[in-house]
Image 1 (tube, one colour):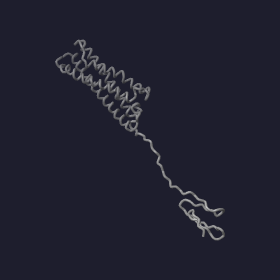
Image 2: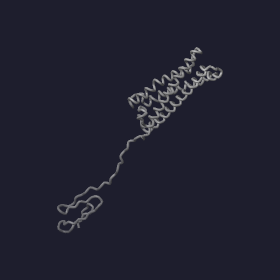
Image 3: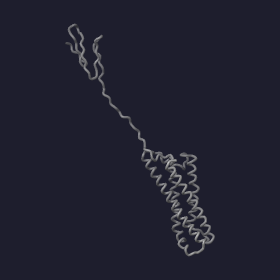
Length: 231
């Protein structure tokens, strides 16, 4: 497997593992607060929703890439980057909400000696931590693929946005049409045939030829560079 598809697979699998952890911890925290406090934390409910969306959509993206490589629309870089950007924004909102709302609950955990409360505080802290990790992983991955795609597009790979990460020509140079060189050849002067019979001569190009023939019985005739002079 190539490096970029391997990075994609590892990043998405780690995000799925953290999403499972966040879903379990958020569900346990919500069950505890509803039982003993008669309500639930907003960040815990948001964490359940975000983790559920991640666990539903990301495995589909991974599976379709294996079953229909380069064919499924979810494998297109434009679609993948758009959706994963939405997902990491949700994880960022979950982590930020947990840091704001959950911190108040966590700061008062030291006042209680109940193991149930301490467990709930640890669950709230873990939800925040794994939410931040998922946000960072997805954000770095999407920015990394976005930069590689833009570089490939500038190299005249115009279809890179519609290709998958596995088939994208990230490290290939663009091909430009080449025009064959035009070579000029010197023109040669046309050949001229002079004379009649066995003493005819052909002159042409850059050479001058001399021939001697009998003309009218009076003397030789010389031909030079296509001109006839009677001697």
